[in-house]
Length: 312
Image: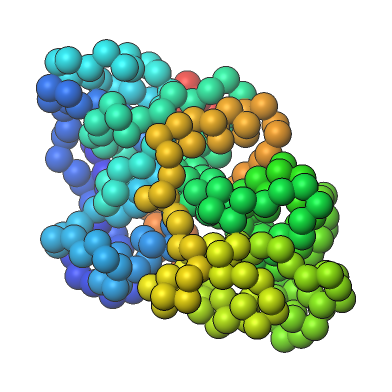
């Protein structure tokens, strides 16, 4: 039996439920994937609420990021074969036992990269890479990254560090030691952050990757950061009107995700897994996402598929 997470009306996570799904088969040009992990993203919550730019027909599936095993290929598919470990993104379809994808949406999991990390990589990874490229950090610069322990922020902080920059990252105190271990200077994002930033960066901040709202963008501008050196992924169109970059996953280059996956596999950077929930606990997983204070990514796991694939 195949299952998928579905919602029949817009609203909160209480509308999510696990239902039996139609059996899928790969048609011409398609790949059937047995999903092992599905990664959660904040945009999922907005889609379920009906407030995202993607407004699906109802009932709708849920999720985007996934990793899994190729279970079937249709006529004309030569990029992958049955048994390949793959990851990628499939909007409104990832939280399921099986999904159909185009070969162009799939990436081979490199040796050394866990399927769990691969399962949460597509949106966070491309968003982080594109945004860091936009602010172009360089050696001896000081870069601020907000939400530096979260799925996007932790990658953006490490990518900025890899450019030689000194990185200050905002987080809750529970994640301070974790950030220090990555070479990131932590700062509490609660009241007093701007005063503390002045102490940590007396010569100013050269560039910033903002994962929070427009108030933070305005704070960075008031701090003296040039709009052209700020990338904001959660501040909406107002940020763009201020001359701030808003580069996210849509601005990623075709090979960005593969290069990032190889860096993760090599241990050059890391993406922590905050927590893993079973597919039938999707409501609890999304409540955890909505609560915030995450360290990395939240995943849904289709444990039965994982066992069948011999991946435990």
